[in-house]
Each structure stands twice: as C-alpha cells, then as structure tokens.
Image 1 (cartoon, rainbow, N blue to C red):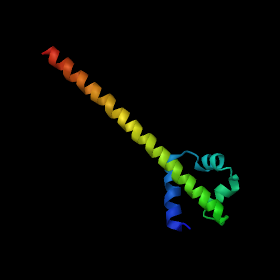
Image 2: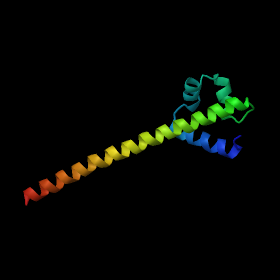
Image 3: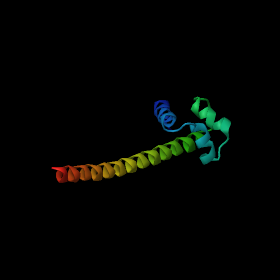
Image 4: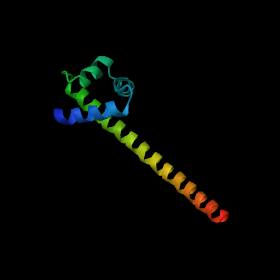
Length: 94
C-alpha cells in the first residue's frame, strides 16, 4: 500500500492545483463525499478506496501538469513571435 507521507504529499499537491479537490474527486471517483473527505482528513477508509483515490489524484495531477506544459509551450511560441515582430519593426524604424 501507500505510505502516509506519500498520500500527504499527493493531497497537498491536489489542494494547490484544485479549488475544491474533494468535489473533483467525488465526481470523478464515484465514491461518496464522506469517503473522499475521510481520505483528505487521514481517517480510516477501505484499502480499495485509498488505492482508487490515490491513483486518481496522481492522474489528475499528471493531467494538470500536461496542461501546464502545453500552456508554457504556447506562451513561449507567442512571445517568440512578439519578439520577432519587435525586432522587425525596430529594424525598419532605423
């Protein structure tokens, strides 16, 4: 199974990435809100629920990270175009 320190790390990351991580997990896991809340509060739940929620957290974190990387690439592309346009307009104004 998972160590408490691993679970805590994942839960902290979820809290940073999502406004309402309990709601997100409840909707995506098909587990009850009390079960998800117990998971976040480090209370006893079924091992199968712990596994489901932990794996789902990892998936959600991974999805957010992929989206972040995609956004960074788009941003870099946009700023490169902007910098090229500035260099071009500066060259013409001389």
